[in-house]
Image (cartoon, rainbow, N blue to C red; front, side, top):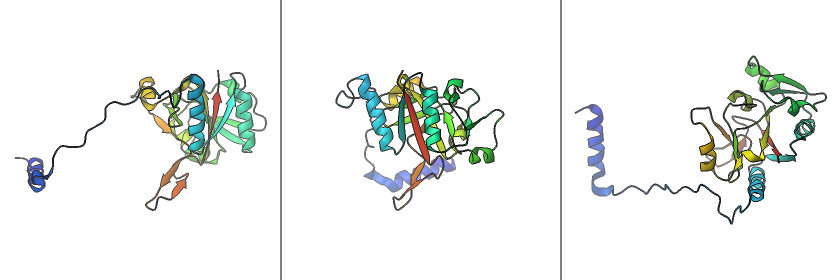
Length: 213
C-alpha cells in the first residue's frame, strides 16, 4: 500500500458512516435566456447594457460607421493623450483621433510603457448579456493579455452580433485552447470584511462601445 492509499484509508475510517451521498451536481445548464428576461434580440442587447452598468462599467452606443467617432469621444472624455492598441486594430477605430497618440504593441511594449499609457483600445471575441461580460481570446484587435491588465483604462469595442445571452452560449463560440480572459466590469476584489477594492489586478475603468451593426 502506498503512502497515498494509506492516508486515504485513514480519512475514510475517520469519516466512518457519516459521509452519505454527495450533493447533486447540476447539469441542466440553461443555454438560452428565458423569454421573461429577454424575448427578442433587442432585449438581449438591452440586457447586456443593463448588466454592464450593474458591473460599474460604462456603455456608449454607435453605428457601424461611427466607431471612430465613438472611440475618439470616449478618449477625449478621459483627456487621454497616449493609448496602446493591438497591432492589428482596425484603422477606422482610430481615424478620428486628434491629439491622442496611439502606440501599436508591436514589438511588445514593456510594462513601464503600458503602465504610463492613458488606456488601451481593443475588440473582443464574444460578450454575455446575462452577466455583462466581455471575453477576449487574443484574436484580431485584442492583443496579448497584458494590454488589458496593466493600463488603468480599457475601452472595448463590442459588435452586436458578438453578444449572446448566456455563458454556455459564449463557451460554444470560443476555442478552449486560446488564452481566454473574462471581464465583467473594472478590476475588483473583496477582502475578508467584504470591502470592495477596485483596480487591484487590472483597469480601474472599463468602457464599452456597443456597435449596433
